[in-house]
Length: 109
Image (cartoon, rainbow, N blue to C red; front, side, top):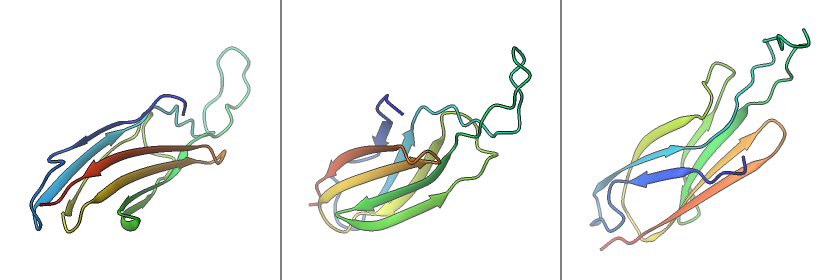
């Protein structure tokens, strides 16, 4: 999880009450622990993103607990209503407790 996430927000300067669409993708192998390595015959250890959350101005707006059936490089899209200015913070956590954080500033007029 060393590469930065790609994050797009439909409008970083919305009016109060506007609906904002957020699209985000991060790079991760998402190994389920169910496949074997053809070279060694050994089971590849599980390594998945297990948790995602989005906060706006420090308040949770979206939480997602992922499962093993999610493909590599998880993509997420969600909407929320613009109520106040602040920082949109996106957090991914994998089952090795590695974290990736992405931030965007939203200015509500």
